[in-house]
Length: 218
Image 1: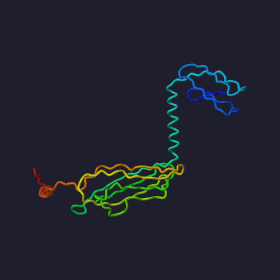
Image 2: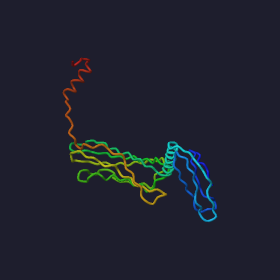
Image 3: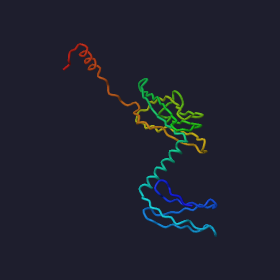
Image 4: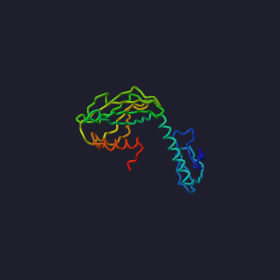
């Protein structure tokens, strides 16, 4: 049997329904060829003579669109976890830097993620002390469109520049046995206990006096 493909006039040949082995016939694009298959077994006969003309560009475009559609179909049936990591610095007292770490998790896919494990243990214990919360958290599931958050607080007395790694999120998909893995957004390097320029209090007070009195300092 022979039918013309609806996209670009590509001739697609298949075996007769009584045959158990499909026939695949290839022809070169842009040229006219006569195609004739060999019999599959005695008495099966041959395929009818067929000709086809096709241009390369429309066929490649159709193939790309088909692959994109298939990719979207497969992606639509899976969870897609997006994690945003943030760190806020503060100085509760001299010589101590406090780091408030937060992670916001969102399932942007259309399937549920199971056994979700958030882990952010990239902070060296010799430089950072955990004072509140835990660096890891587990969730039984995260439904499509659902969000989750995780937070903990660290303190450091070690001065220097530190580059924290993204948090790691592992989860399971109902259709796959292997664990899936995702990463949070990276953060900029942190300047722990960085020296801050001193504030010139006299100039600041002087400017305030001139402002309230209406007298220009210039």
